[in-house]
Length: 194
Image (cartoon, rainbow, N blue to C red; front, side):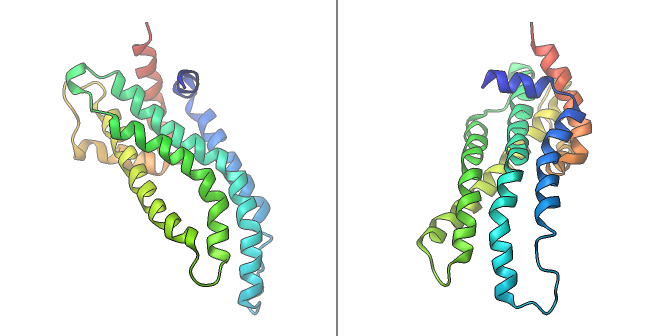
C-alpha cells in the first residue's frame, strides 16, 4: 500500500483530476444516451433500460470512485502523519473506514441492480441497504478526518470544525477541492520524506 500511497501523494492535482473524472465521464457519456427519452414510454421499458445499463455504467466508473476513496485515505494518512505527535489524531476508525468502503464499492456495483430488479422483498436488500448506510457514514467520517488533518497542517494544534469545514467541502466536491488540497498533500509528503 505504500507504493499506491506514494504515487497518489506525489501526483499533481491535474493528474488526479483526469484519472478520477475520466472513467466517470466516459461511463455517463456512453450509457446515458441509451436510456429511453420518450415521455410516453412505459415504466417497465424505462426500468428495464436503466437496469440493463446501470451495471455497465457503474463498472466503467468504479475506477474513478476507487481512486477517490484512495485519495481520501492518502490525504488523511499523509497529512495526519506529517503533524507533530501531539497534534495527530487517532486513525483507527479512519484506517478501517476507507478500506471497508473500497471493498464495498465493487460488491455494491453488482448487488444493487439485482436488489432493485426484484419485485417485493429480497434477502440481499436486508443486508445491502443497512450496509450501504454504514459505509456512507464511514465515508463521511473519513472525509471529516482527512479535512481536519489538512486544516491542521502548519499549525501547532489540531484544527477544529470551523477551520476544516471548507476542506470538508473541498473533499466532498473533489473536482474543485482537488486543486486546493492536493498541493498541500504534495508539500506534506515532500516534507515527511527524508
